[in-house]
Length: 407
Image 1 (tube, rainbow, N blue to C red):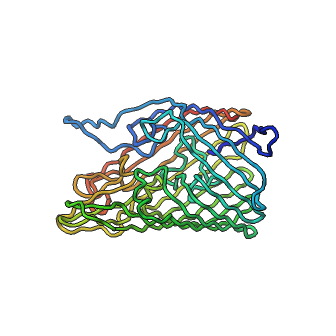
Image 2 (tube, rainbow, N blue to C red):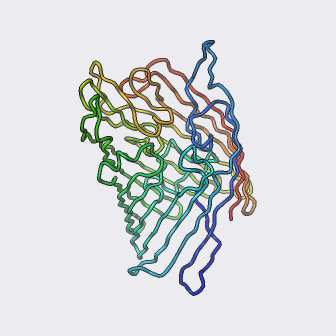
Image 3 (cartoon, rainbow, N blue to C red):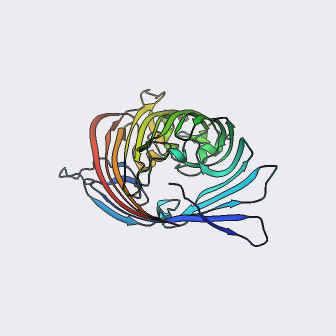
């Protein structure tokens, strides 16, 4: 899902070079069930929980159809004179996805990224893919969610250092939060950036890597019945392993992630807050495990592929189970519907997706088709955020037809 920029222009009498490009995309989507999604089902996460009327009819057992062009985008790569002996490059990109449901069709920033490249060292500044979201590892699904919510998916303001060590690469990054979170305040109040460490081994046909990510947040300045001062903090650690193998017939991409506060990466999870009468709210990070594999044929006229993903909610690390406690979960997947804790809440135990596809590229044009089967197991939530009773399997079939014209 990266833009390939090919059209060059140069401002007269300046050494600055511009490469413009992007694509125009149209999607037609049909679902057999109501879904938890983003931007009028442009991005589908999972099927909605059952919602029965007085006669026992499930209101969410209803089909839906939509056509959209909001995924179209444009960008520009910029190169100019060397800076401190390094090649200086910039990348600016946006689309019409909008920053919120009410802003659909509005132009929004995706990337604003500047790099300084020396022979074996790169420094990057700006908003770009989160270090856990690796462009060359992107599954090639037609569903615009890509591998989400089975892979970390985010774009963040960051400062990133990458050092080449032969065929090995070492990455260090300081990361802030902006997109893909329901609330940036806990990250701002923490007063420190998130930290990232990654190492990989790359050849022309094979890549393998390990990554670790640390987040420290302060969820609020005050909490409890009396709105008392709170300096409660929460630490989360995420680990990921990934690999890519290119053979003559197929290219295989795969990842395994053990995430804490995974909602900040558009995954199951988040964190839980616990409040006792007369006390401030305390917090526990939630645990998520996720796995996916994508297989794509290396053919030219007809290109089949397959994506399979599985993710499991493992609940809060240290749930408070004292009598009289109230629980609440936080994060994007709690906001849109999928993770909850405590009395009256519904939550998801696990999800999976199987999505075969076929692409038909013709020069700069591509017709894309995909059939996606997904299941989400819902149930009544305990204090750790796991579903323990009244379980329900929400099954959805999604049929997508997309056309993409690259320029």
